[in-house]
Amino acid sequence: MARSFNFSAGPGILPEPVLHQAASEMLDYKGSGMSVMEMSHRSKWYEDIQNKAEANLREIMGIPENYKVLFLQGGAHLQFSMIPLNLKNSGKADFWITGNWSEKAFQEAKKYISVQPVASGKANGFRAIPEVDVSMLSPEADYFHMTTNNTVCGTRIRGCDIPDTGKVPVVADMSSNILSEAYDVSKFGIIYAGAQKNMGPAGVTVVIIRDDLIRKTEPWVPTMLQYAIHADNSSLYNTPPCYSIYLCGLVFEWIKAQGGIPAIQKANEEKAALLYAAIDSSTLYKGLVEKKDRSLMNVTFATGSEDLDKKFAKEADALGMANLKGYRTMGGMRASIYNAMPLAGVEALVAFMKEFEAKNKPGC
Ligand SMILES: *Cc1c(COP(=O)(O)O)cnc(C)c1O
Image (cartoon, rainbow, N blue to C red; front, side):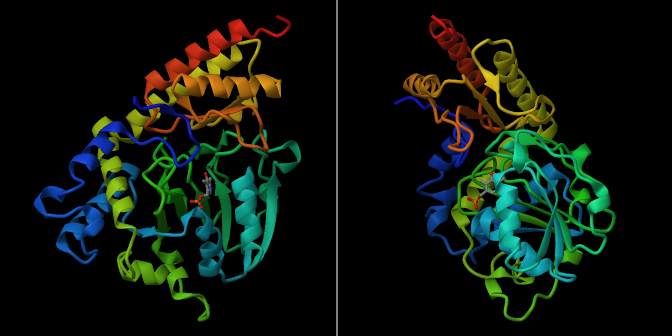
């Protein structure tokens, strides 16, 4: 069977050359006599894989020397807890609530510290990025939390729109748009991302953390939830998700081969522009979020009829365009066009949208 154009929001599409390479190295990794899944995480073989993955990530994101890169488990979800547990000092944090995931991060942090929403788009269903009222930021907050790309509704915050929080570190959930466009790492205290949207398979979460934020926690905090333990042990305190890290490493090499983030960003902007133009030039489809806040990664739109939306996703699927059904709270369609989605996938979707519109014009 031919491979689908997979528009899934996550786990998402991976670059085909990466899958081919992983397949060719599956039984015997570079003459080691075993697969990456079977080797000791203390072996020289594996050590090289992890070191190379980290070095490549540092290079493509321009991660400064005074930041550690950690490969952890527990998904972005566990970071919702680890961040307050590790950064707690004044016991206060400010939250920019721009989507379902930032709302979840806020609710989880509330278990441990005092949290304040400084802007929330919840009242209008997260259809726009609410402006941050900087006068509300508390200067003694332990951190300011934000989500750079809102996977569910399809909005994003650019690097140039990060508010000036002074000495308060900005902590960003970048799960769904890490490596998709340029962000200046030095503007953040912590960047975290589950791998399965734009980096690799599920199972590993990348945490990029400035050295001064690796603090001593309260003694009761579980060992596995302390950044210092993982930093001191080069993410090898316990068995890491070796195979997921290996695959992420292949994706980082693929990104380098494409020309790094600048080239990837350009391709992403072209793909998104093509799809948004198809939505805006149509009388059937409507974009679900404010234009200025549109995501490059998750494109949400609807026909206005639930039945037609269902029919759209079903017919597209039959043509090899998988997972276009929107998230249940948003309805409509969501096309996730991560780094690995080829332009041909977006072109095929746009062609299908035109065909579907011609056959299903309202009133016909
Ligand atoms: C998918 C997603 C999460 C949840 O990730 P898990 O790895 O499943 O915990 C959190 N934040 C954002 C922005 C996401 O897209």
